[in-house]
Amino acid sequence: MEIEIRDARIEDVPIVAWTVLTALDMSTDDMDRFIESCSNESTMYSWKNSIIATVNNVPVGCLIAYDGSRYDELRKKTWSSLWEDTDPSIIENTGKEAHEGEFYLDSMAILPDYRKLGIGKLLIEYAIKKGKELSCQYSSLLVDLDKPRLKAYYETMGFKEFGKMEFFGHNYYRMKYV
Image 1 (cartoon, rainbow, N blue to C red):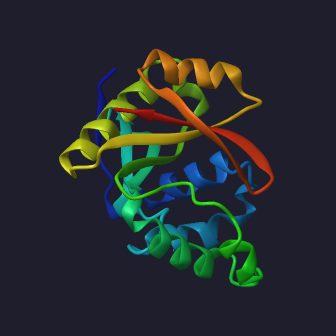
Image 2: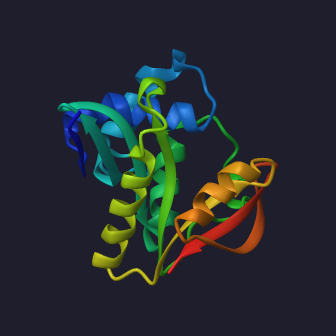
């Protein structure tokens, strides 16, 4: 089995869209709308912000990550492309997931048949390296307080908790890797 981790290409948009839907626990009935948004280079879920894992040249996983200094601009474009009928004040009154100086690891998913092979760890290591190359001070992510095993997983990779936040009605640990 040959595993490769690489920056996404435009042809990877379907797995990028699947990753977002999977990470948000949404139905794939919305796939067309998400494919359109992930094809747009100026959204947070763009293929341009994605890292792909392939096995034998077939995409099997994805991690979406970006410089936190771009968060406000990316969020605005993303919401207008995916949830244009949402009251804008909801977005304005929702906390920020990512901040200046961070390389934010937003969403990750691996196809079920390829889980537990270390692919997630490889994606995260690639993202951390990419964040350093972009001169970000650290990499960060959110972990749901109700998922202690996931928090422990990130801790084994060197992430440390540095706060908590509420985001769209869920409570999260903020974690960073320096």
